[in-house]
Length: 192
Image (cartoon, rainbow, N blue to C red; front, side, top):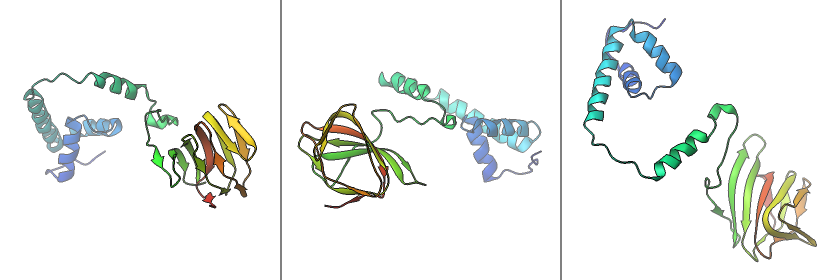
């Protein structure tokens, strides 16, 4: 049982304000609701903040939402709950970042901080190259689109490769451009 209060504190004001605005997590809101049935101090604060919220809501002129709001809200609703264990990164989320190599950009999809393994998209413009590098761990590569070449091996859309750990990977080139899905170590080193 939570203690009954005799005077208002900053913590009580904060909790009452969040409760009145509907911003307390569900479990905390239930606990606070149970508490204010017996605690007159906290109940009075919640009621005061509730009245203020009602006055504010009534003093604002209604505004038509932008047309894109419905789609954005539906996109958020369609996403699974964060605690489901499923994490989704939409195609339009994340940022393509430049590398030191002309015509080569990447988008980080996931980094496992324990193992330092990362999943990235690597995009190479036509004629670009990725320099010789050393693989600290196993690298997996799926060609999502375009073509990619390493020495005499040419891969195209849908082709998959596995490159062993603790090996040097020679320069990678592309003729028409490509997008690669890579699972590799963040500890890999460029050798050129």
